[in-house]
Length: 286
Image (cartoon, rainbow, N blue to C red; front, side, top):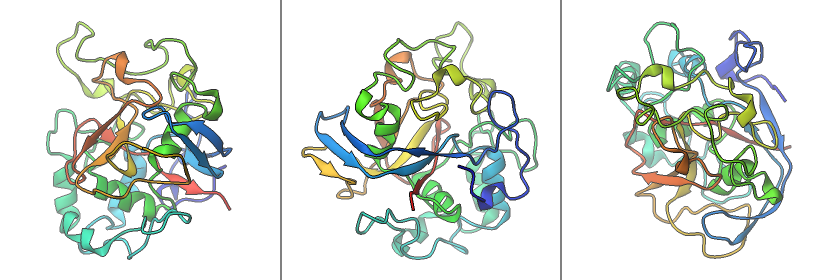
């Protein structure tokens, strides 16, 4: 489950609860049918891979160092497509939404330095999730790394344990701090700090059915989909109708536990990076 990824070329195996796993581990999710938690309509999915971990600062650094994710070096048209969903790849009209060059990308990542996990030189945050990601940059990253953004259905399916229809990624037990990083606004300490974005994979009690870490809390994660209710059963589907908003899943460190359910989602304009948004990439099964 660990094919070579550009984001992990030369990167030490430092992720997971013991700090000795590849940060690029990607786990097979066995396809099937489940009821989408936001609408109740059935969705059927083919097998796919989903990265075990949120994209770390260390992995994102490889993307930045390669000069990617900019108007000067955008994804190729059609890159990062879901092979079963027409029109799901990169649209060259989106190039203008990327920062002009690497310096501009770094500046965007540090819009609010107090909570930005990015540092221009490697430091203590390399295994924290990369935050302040807008949707276009997240898409470009996954495409460059040999993957793609997960569809909302794929993300929900992994978080709900597929046909097990779990309330939370770990099961039906209520959230607590042994399972997820959350509610740094209400933990009795003033505000949030970088430490509230935990090192990825360090709370294995919260792992999902197929072993994915941090599906609840830490950072919200972008999906491919536009916002909108899923008003019909579907197979390997995504809502691509209204690109003015894109969907993110999973809650973040600043949310109360009521946002950590397998289907809790939010939406933002795709060009809006926030300090509590990151991504994990999906990969199509052969």
